[in-house]
Length: 244
Image: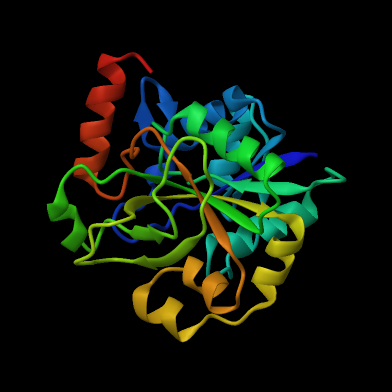
């Protein structure tokens, strides 16, 4: 079974334009993510982007990148185009890593990939324990409710994804890493955006609305994503202190 890791990235993020090329320890954020993906050693790694500056940076640091259309509505559409443009054949699974999470835990990536290899599933994703119940009402933290309590050894289905909740049982902090079976990715990109997806601004609801299961693997912790300048400065400080 063969996995291909694709990292969608673009310069035009609304809250922090140009963030993929912001530096931490002399390396851009997108190249840090590429390095983590390579270190996970689960398959070939490609950055998919509409921006030549990102292509140049990634390649200058020894990683692979593919130029994609600037018309894509979602990162999933972008990874699908990159899959089609790559010359990598016989791919069974496509791992979609977020380009703005340079502190993602390598073991979480490996564990998700292992679970996809051992448990036939349409889509797999990650979630971590919520340590502070105040986060249940924080709309910037996406939550997933699972069929069963999440443990290291199981891979339950996600029942719903939401931005705020009163529920405290079987609810976890969703981490936006996805591993698609090739067939599921092909099917997903052909589907129209669902009403649920548009209203909640959550692409994964399109899958559930069309009866495509998403199974959930427990992550050690929630990585800090870079959405604002404050996020960037906080993460930069941590990663420079730990020399990551």
